[in-house]
Length: 165
Image 1 (cartoon, rainbow, N blue to C red):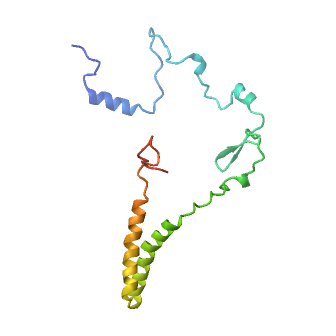
Image 2: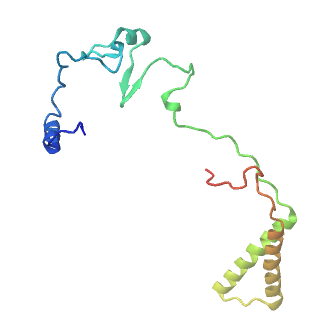
Image 3: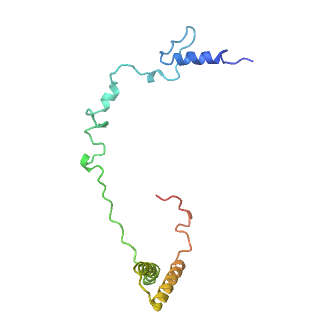
């Protein structure tokens, strides 16, 4: 059984690590020096730009704050740098109007709790008739709000909203 592993794996690994920064070895004689890429993709190590790149650029770009900024406007707009980041949202639609029964139910639930909290904080004595009206308003408001809930999901095709952003 033949393997491609060297006899001493640790010594081979140490040799590879020691030669990490060395330039690659030229191909040996008799072995074809094929590249896994076409010759047209070979790059030159010089700092000169290629002719094809220079012909594509109309004006030289500037480097401002780490960003390459060109004076040409690819979108053909009149936007300036001062306009960037000043989003003005559209006006929101008007709030829906509550019908009187829903408004009364919310007033019964929230109003009775607020009156009870203030009465406790300030030591007010609530008359028995007002206390009965608060209890009836609270329970009645909850019953109305639960009864008016929709029985169907908002979108029948997608019953679970999941994480809505």
